[in-house]
Length: 615
Image 1 (spheres, one colour):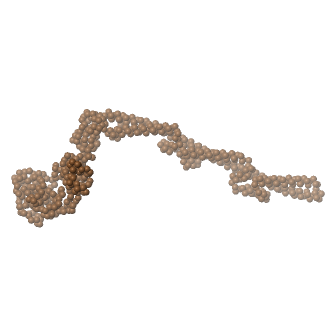
Image 2: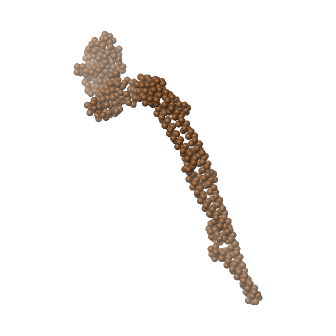
Image 3: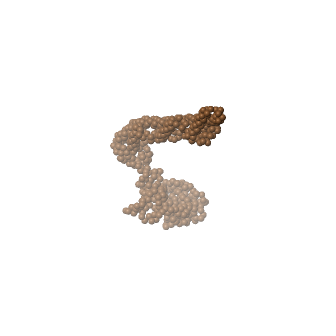
């Protein structure tokens, strides 16, 4: 069946019956629209046919019979109240005289709008205090920067000095090491030369002794034959004895050095062709061992002892300078590179802050450090003082940009601008032009009704029904008498845990969006608390059903014809009522204009434009 067009707006009609009869063209008829539902049996006396103009004149509206969930609801009374989070009072937060007022009671303002201007000596004094605190901080900062610069130079100089001390001690140690090495080499050479002389003497003594022995044997033979004189024999014997003594002495010198007789014989047999150290087995030994074994042959012993003592002292000095450098914050790697490259690190690449932070420990007793620490303490106090002054101005209502402007310009101002802390409507005004106000005086009260609360009352006898099923977040439908056809929807935001002992009710509050500001604080409201949804059943809007003679009826639309049909109803909530018998899904019923239709059927000569709920 084609569904007719529905009107969403309506207006009351108040005309005399003659005009109604002419304009509405009411006709009692038994003629049915071609598309009428043949399942209904129609009584011609209960049918009204309307023209389009007649429908518009009475503001007739229809709704579809459809499957809907009938909800379990509880009704409660309440009041529209301001949302506690949407109220604001305006205080100057600083004393002064009202010079200009820009908004008055009843006007709407936005957050940040300029409400009024105050002339405040207190503000001017606070700004002067701010300017002085800034100047003090800047002065201390400048002095601290200069002193830390001097301190940084001292640290750099000290770090360079410790590098130089370490490098000099390392150089001295290296020079002593080189000198000792040279002296040892010279001593080994001297020892080698002495050993060669000893070998030469040994070989010479051995050769001479051999010659003397041969000469002595010939002289003895000649003396036996009385060819040679006895005196010559004695002379040869004396020379032979001297030769033996010379050879023994030469061998004894080797023995004093701990050289065995076998080695001495080896030296004699070699004939001077092999280096003496090789014959002694000392060629593979280091200079230290050679010096230790044959130190007696070297005249450099005392010099070596002195040089080695000086070397030990130099090594101790290097170690001490290294420890001082490490204590200053220099690293092992830096000192190793310094010893290799001989390049002093200047630390010019470090900022003053980094230098002081990294190398402060070793100059803790510095006078410059004492000055820096004292200035830093004074600077911190100045910063705290400045922050307090800024916080004081901020609490007084000055914005950070305003405070920064005073700091930059150094110019205080006596004018203080009071702005709206929130958007809304001014509902109270206490400020008057020329009045002197204190910082805690209330100048305006602002209320934002974009969101309101509806305070409801749940009576004690209904608590048992809803106690286990209502909670914050539950949907609430709200109606006020000023807008009978409008349903406002909200959600429970708070439920009181205390019962009013006198009225025996529990208060709850529903938060409702109110962008059109239709709900006004102070209005009475009816609330429907939605507890749960039922199963879907055939239903129509509650206002479509009216009662007559103990029975329930609806007007069903068939094209331009509207027939009065009896129905059997079931469960209902605050919007819909179940139809158990008398309608089919998809049929349209009249929800506005039933009074006029009833009068037309009854031919009542009265105005037919009144609205209401005839059920």
